[in-house]
Length: 218
Image 1: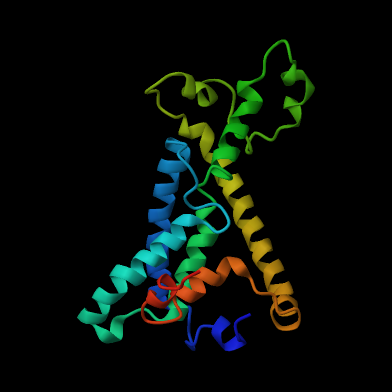
Image 2 (image 1 turned 180 degrees about the horizontal axis):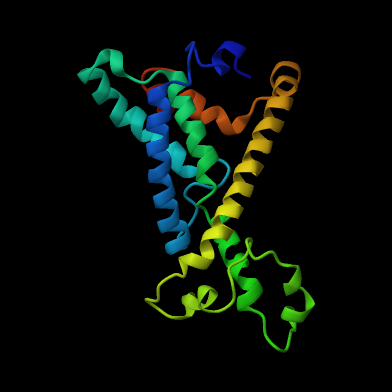
């Protein structure tokens, strides 16, 4: 296991304003890429997985191309290790939301309660009266647009459910973050877990260049 000093970024302030701004821009790029590849094309995982491939690829591309160029243009403007790890953490946390595991699972199930209701299964009589209208889009064109190519989405009926489920997802992520903060002292300082999923990112940002990692025999 790496020494404790190697596990922590040497920067006094890893969370800076420019790290947040760059991280938000990278998150928007990752979200668009995930929606196109995972949801639109169903071609594989981009922002989800363990570890998520896209955040590692973006970090590797920065260390190979972006960091050397920025050092030549402005030696004092290069991103520090803590800032890079902050951006990477933002990508890992936000990359799962536009993936097929969250959005790709949530949206079809929001519409399925009305879309799949038929006189034969009697869903309307069995449990539709338990559904809150602000959690699910209304029956009709709002859930049938997928059957008609080129038809517009009825955003008027999808607006409230999307906002409600977004609030739920934000609350869920916040609770998970709080749980991690509670157990972090036990995991890091007492049990001294190695966290293998973070090894690549830590080694990529360990030096000014990722060459030692790329030249490692194994």
